[in-house]
Length: 327
Ligand code: LMR
Image (tube, protein in one colour):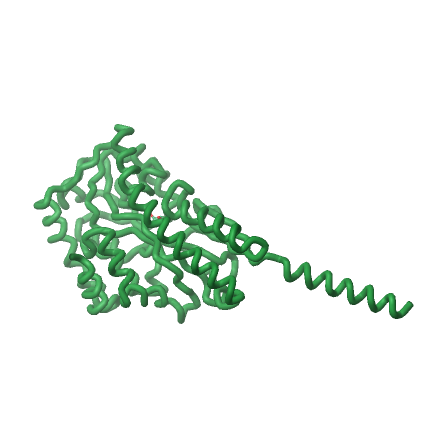
C-alpha cells in the first residue's frame, strides 16, 4: 500500500512539474498606435513569427492603441513586470536617457537614410544600451518617418505659425523648437490628439504621415507642411531583468526574429510614408505644401540654434557623429 502511495505521489509531482515546464513565457507588447501603422504591423509580425518558431515556449499578447498603457506609463510598467515589450517614440525617453533627445533635433538628419546610417554606427548602436543602468534593454530601432506639421491656416514659413497652439510629444527639444516659433505647446499622449484637434484644444500638431493618416487628423486640419524637420522613430525596449531571465536559446531566437521584423517595419515605414501621405491628398480634405529650398533654409535658420540648449545633455561628440551620417 505504502509503495502504491509513494508511486502515486511521485507521478503527481512529475505531472505538476511537466505542466509547469510546459507553461509558455508570456510577452505582453504594449504600444500606442493602430495595427495599420509601421509599429502596429511590426507588433503583429513579431507575434506571428514568435508563435510559429517558439510554439509552446513563448506566447505574445499585443495591446495596441494605448489599450493598456500610454507612453508616459509604459516604461514603469516594464520595470514592474506589467508588460514585457514596448516601443515608445525616441522623443519619450528623456528622463531615462537624455542622449536620445538627439533624434528630435530639428534639421539634424537630412532624411531617414541618414538616421539609419547613424543608428547602424558604433555611436548609434551604443544608444540601445544607454538605459541599462535604469533597468531597460534596447532591442532595436524601428522607423516611422520624418514629421510634417499641420494647422488650419496655410503654413509655409516660420512666421505663419505665430500664435498657434501645438500638441507636442513630451519632448523638451520640441518645446524649445516651438518656443523659437512663438507657438504655445501642449504635451499630451498620442491617444488624445484627435479629440484635442476636434475640440480646438490645440490648433496644430506635428507627426509622421502614417500616424496622421491612421488617426485621420486631416478631418480637423486643413493645411499640412511637409517639412521633414525631424525624425519619428522608436526604440523596441524591454526590462533587462526579464530579458536576462529568458533561456539562452529562446533569447537568441527572439533576437533573430527582432532583426527580421525590424527590416520589415522599416520597409513598411518607407512605403507608408509615401502611400498614407498620398491617401490624404486623394481624400481632398487637406492641402499639403512642400516648402521650397529657400523656405527650408528659413526654417533651419530659426530652428537649428535650439540645438545649443541640449548640447551638454546630449554631448557634442554624439551630435557630431549624427551629422556625419548625412552625405
Ligand atoms: C506620438 O506621440 O505622436 C507618437 O510618438 C506616437 C507613436 O508612437 O508613433
